[in-house]
Length: 364
Image 1 (tube, rainbow, N blue to C red):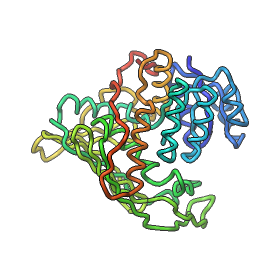
Image 2 (image 1 turned 90 degrees about the vertical axis):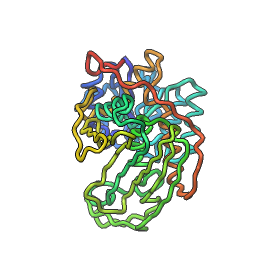
Image 3 (image 1 turned 45 degrees about the vertical axis):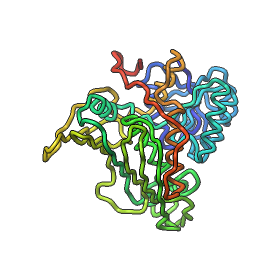
């Protein structure tokens, strides 16, 4: 049993706690830590966390903890992960790996030097939806992949999120926030990206929060909030990606792969399930494809469970830094908005697809 210490008990922690304690059989919650102790106390009360630590350094010193689960905010990921690695702990981090490219590079170098596993979110691509899409592409159901498009369009978080300011500061913006879902799905479907072109815009220099409890607060926007990207994959597939907090859209989520014999319409990559649709040849409509893998519901911590199994069995992790680092380089390249082709320095090879386990919650 791989024992997990959670740092950060914010909004997303609930589904992690639910799945660690009730779904995945080979990981065990050992301790939690949050600067707001009431959050940690609530986790202990609801999910039976054995220990609470007031500081992450105390948690890192716990000899029983094998893996640190980093659920802090994006701009905090680097320092939390760095200190955990320095303490000799494997780390699984929420996305992104770091808030900047140099942060990711340093973390990978440290993990390699210490012989530790370093992986992270998103793990939605391990769910039934994207795994079914991968099987269809690999089986030639749309012929030879030619192109792809990804769209995440909306008008930001200030109208609904309880504390939206960090989305517009260092480590935020639509590419670092939502890009990981789309790009991780795409590289698992189509392989690594060779080069990227980014064009960016910040349409609104200030935004007013209208959601409680900070309604009326004005945010200074420090990051690009509209990013258009063009991707060239190692396979020759060309793709486009748009992430924006600047527009109103009735159909703001799209992920499609175009092939020589048809088109695959993928599910929202921020979910684990479907629907999956396919259009073949000159068909005027689409038809639904049954999901062929497990984990259709919200299965966050699936990636953590996969990394834990990799630690235990010494196999490759499907959520390793090789993936999160590649995605971080793509995103930071697009965020720079150079408007010209930039050759990427990292390479990515897909890991093996998911295997249907006989016992739910136990991985291969």
